[in-house]
Image (cartoon, rainbow, N blue to C red; front, side, top):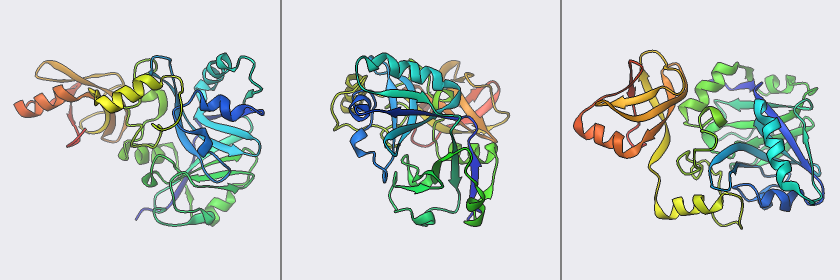
Length: 296
């Protein structure tokens, strides 16, 4: 088993949502059930367009009286503006809290363990160093995640056996598990939750009340209308730039997203990939052989 690592995710930001009506406000907007979010439980969720297309994904944690959204750092401003557009007269406060917090990923060698007194289930959370530590709600294989004050001393992580890693370590970790990295992998205004694997990532609740974009998400789920799928692929050759078409037999069958060291995420057109496999036609992107998973 690999040695446990901790990596500061410099590209992550934090948006704070507070006020007496913060819970009901978020409940009507995001894909997961805000009523599940407590000091002891976090969730993964998305904000969609009214037509059900992806805008933002984030982790939702409860810290004191506020909700913290662990989100894409370069897009915190856009997320805040989109949330503000729905605020109307709700008694809700919104703020970019990125200067106050940093996000840390802890992974490798933690499966089945109970570091820091964490309970065993996905999304379980505990107070930690003035912030929150949680089991990644997307799945046990993704390890742990923390939102901590920027001035928190991280020496306790090394003392607990988590050696410092770098961004590439985390990139390899998430790619190997097929976890998307926000708008790098999910096309804003076009991707749907079902094609991005949000059900498997515990990012959508099909039992909660209405939220923005729910209709398409529910219809896609119950009618089985997924024609494209975000999936990990193996590369034999250099990593093609993000957006490079994947072709087979002269036809486009998908598109490369993020990747590193022979592994990438790609959007695959399921029927065309199946046809290529049946015809024995290899997949390629920019001259690099692309090997899809057995079941995208």
